[in-house]
Amino acid sequence: MIRSGWRASPGEFVLRAINVLVMSFVVVVTLYPFWYIFVASFSDPYEVVRTSGLMIWFKGFDLYAYKEVLRHRLFWTSYRNTLVYLVSGLIVNMTMTTLAAYALSRRNIKGKGVIMKIIVFTMFFSGGLIPTYIVVDNLHMTDTMWSQFVPFAINTFNLIILRTAFQAIPDSIEEAAIIDGASAAQVMVRIVLPLALPSIMVIGLYYTEEIWNSFFRGLIYIRTDTKYPLQLILRQVLLSNVMGQSDQSFVDTNIGQTVKYATIVVSTLPVLMVYPFIQKYFVKGVMIGSIKG
Amino acid sequence: MALSRKPAGALPAKLTRKTDWKNYITQYWFIYVILAFVLAYYVIFKYIPMYGVLIAFKRYTPSAGIWGSDWVGLRNFERFFSSAYFMRTFRNTVLLNVMNLAFGFPAPIIFALFLNELRHQVFKRTVQTISYLPHFISLVVVAGMLHDFLNNTGTITTVLNLLFGTEKKVWLNDKNSYRTIYIVSDIWKSLGWSAIIYLASLSNIDTQLYDSAEIDGCGSLRKMRHVTLPGIAPTIIILFILRIGAMLSLGVEKTLLLYNPNTYEVSDVISSFVYRRGFGIDGRADYSFSTAVDLFNAIINLTLLTVANFTARRYSETSLW
Image 1: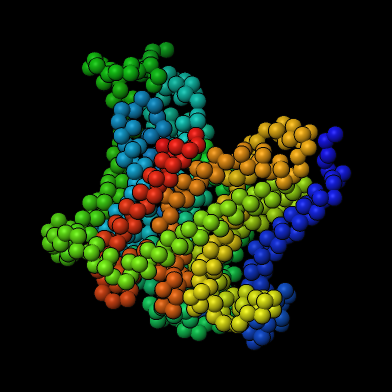
Image 2 (image 1 turned 120 degrees about the vertical axis):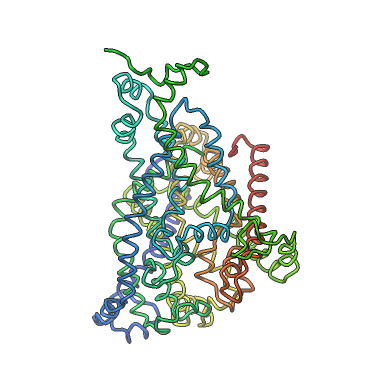
């Protein structure tokens, strides 16, 4: 007889109970930090210091921290910079990656195999930090917005994901269009791109996440603080009293705890608001990526 | 209707006649324009830097350029291998990666297995969605949270003090705790996200296998061992190879955000050392030396990946190439 549902043996029941407990622990450990930061950022700064990091509800109500964030000149500049880098970067990333994936997904292309090998090789070996920096510097891109997305125009992993998606479109549809007199460009714009739209959007989300969260490319290539992306300013605010992060001389060395929390809330809230709605597309992307492996 | 162009599939495999070539070009010139742009990108931003690796064997001066700078042979490598930094950064890189493989790699597998056993579908989906959350938070914010929660009045410090009576201190200045913090926070950030691929793989397992295992008298634990684990083994192997291939390159951003001079002895990894030396964060910038260290790192990486792939191909049917 097949045991299932609630008619389980005592041993099974204990296992299930442990499982639910472990999972609840994971949920608490994941959510508490965010809840604490949210609650503390609106609370009385002095009360927050006294609670030693344990708060489950607002202690007093104080918008001091948010007023400080509003006053922070560079914070909003960097917010705007990141949006500029995001929009320009997405245009470059999506154009280059989509076109590349389309071209490399076509059958009967002479030399495709060689080009694919040239591209895939860069996933396994790279010139490294300084030689890449020298190239970007020689192109006079350092300390300009171009450095934030042109050197990163194609993420090879995303390219392969998208190429796989394009290849999955049946030949017969394209052949029919070609017989009807469509050119290669028309086949791409009218047939292939619309059919692969979900995958293209997933790649767009990947790039969005990449640009939004990047701080290393700003750290390397941008010198003027008014051109800093958001994450670089966040680093200065959040790590302002950490030793060895000394290039942050222009920010107060002792930014109050609640101001840091408010900065986290303001910079992370947009992400937290959209993530429940877009996470399923990201998950889909993971699936597309795994087909290749 | 006149057929002015042949359909793609109708082109002969070997183009010999002039008209064939003409057809081919009219059909595909657009593709080659695209490929020219794509190749240009890869040449400029990936292959010219590979050529630039030459400066590892030179004394690079910007005015002389890459080719014009003086050759110094293997001097930069000798300098690195004979310095104390070599042992320190190499040991830290290997240790952090091995620990990450030992704890960080199995964590999402275990999480996926547990999640898979949950009967209540709404609870299961809620846990799963919540577990993705930290993946979407930027590394800078995670580092900021860690610095705050681990200082002497921070959340984690307080909880540890209440539960285990540990000292209230700035944990990120503590050499003995740095690696644990690094690994545990990594698991926290990636647990749910890395589990996705295993969950997908789990859902592909034939349910009949579970039914027959149950008829044979297997409980959940034995079903997990004899049905579930073999079912997701190929996925595990592929991800393991990929993980090994990315081993030594892992963690520059996170290290830069978490370490400080107090913990350099245990926290400084090859890539963070390359960054500091390359951009002169502590002392003079030395492009050639930094590139030599970086090249050493890249070669080790490539070797690891090849060995991992070879081993996987030898002992199982799954491999990358």
